[in-house]
Image (cartoon, rainbow, N blue to C red; front, side):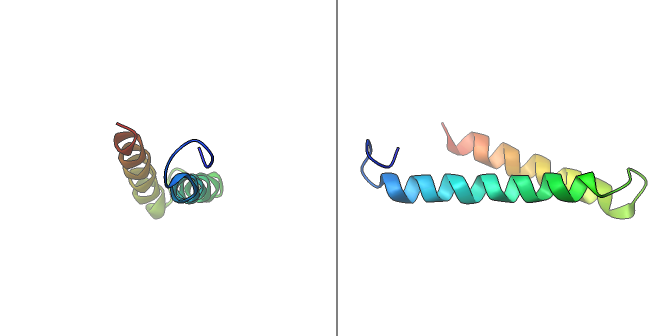
Length: 58
């Protein structure tokens, strides 16, 4: 991506940052119990992040 598109560096950096946010949310969920009050909030946040990233691809 960096070499094949105008502004490829910026696009690649954004994708890496987006991936990092999803990875952090997943790690946070691994440490939570499903009965934890923050669990549902974190799942909603993860779902939103993944949905937004998917929509940006089109």
